[in-house]
Image (cartoon, rainbow, N blue to C red; front, side, top):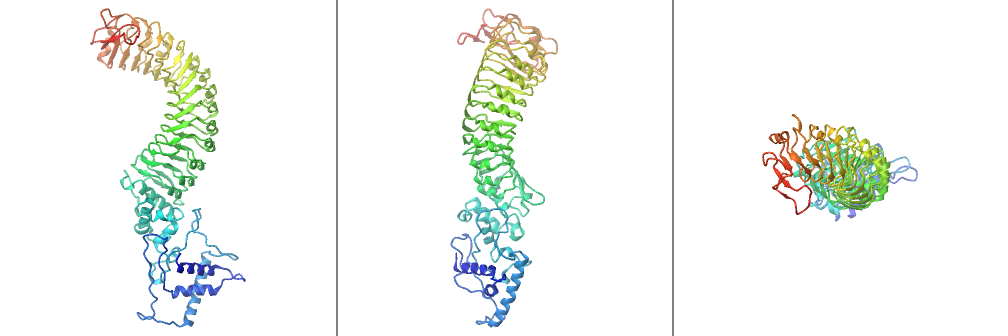
Length: 616
């Protein structure tokens, strides 16, 4: 610190030091004022550690009597003037509450914690004729606008970064100090730190190239900037909503300045780097949405667990890694955990179930291993559980089906084994059930008949045994039914075709037997019907007028069907039906079907034998 500044700081402290009788040392005040009235010139340069852009501040000598300078002013006049100024400054400080009856403090005007105490000004006080016109700017205390901002921001950003014009922080500081029209009088702003944090965000994510940057870096209050919302009474930012806005770059620790932020939505941008530690200051945050970016580092950094108000954490479709720590149980308000399509490893900790308000868990398309915690069944608010495309294993715990508010259960493409528990019938609110591509075995429980709200029933590519239960008569909105390649035998359940909403029915590559139910043509919305690769016998049933008008694919090849393809079915080729496949190939076709007018693909052979069957 320059010698002059050390002396000035000492003089100020003398001014504020209480005397033994509770007053102030007037001599200290007078001495300070004397130096203000008649400054001493000498080595008054800028601190070496101050802002790089600061220029040496030269203070002109006080003019006396026009352009003539008096070399020796009258000391009696000096002391009289100093006494008047001292009394004036004492009264000013009293009004500003700079001192109390018994002690004095030099507290910051910012009552939020912002790091270590700010360093003193690094330049001498300019004389009165250099101050701006209008009301006195008391907060500057002799500093330039740049120096004042530097002292305010250096607790947030290290000086070397703040002074580097190639950094986002340096760009923001330079703009605020020299170009920001809203800070021509910085003392009139109560949200300088917040404005700085937003401007760093702008520069760190190439704000000049955003799809919409309306208002940013303008002369308006930051609450008027595109995507920024504030509390009406305080002017503090509570929301930043900038999804799909071409943000490119890293987030920085200066986000800590937005400590009243409640919602942060940067969905679908090109943000890189890891989550900054500055996020820990945003303790009011309830929504953090960083999905579909290029974020790396830990998916669950320690910073996250300081956000105890967090309701929704969304970081799916990034490049984050690591495990799910047990500390996640501390996020007691968490309702949405969306961390899918990343590179998260390890087991799912049972402590996750301790966050009892969870409504949706998206951990699909990661590298998770181990078992599915049975404690998930205790999550009574859980409505959506998606764990597909991992390497989870072991049986699906029967306790899971205690979470009776589940509407979506997606466990496909894992290594779950053993039988499907009968308790699955407890999920009466379930709409989407996908258990395909696992190692499930045994019978499909008849309790699935209680799942009358199901829209998707997908269990293909498993090792079941037994029949498909004929229990679909009460289904109200089934759309997609897929039991293909799942080792079922027995008859096709005719109640399936009594569901008027049925659109997709895949029953391929099982060992189903018997005939095609005559009800197969009943669903008015049926688009795809795949019955190929089974052991069906008999003929293809007729279709009544007006039925199957939405049908685009009918596959019945590789069965034991005989006879002639009904003309009512062939007539559908003039409508929506694009593909009609049957065993109409070879010199002795099992089914007579005109090619290509009716059947547009003919196969030879009733049983699928790889390398033997042929097709036309």
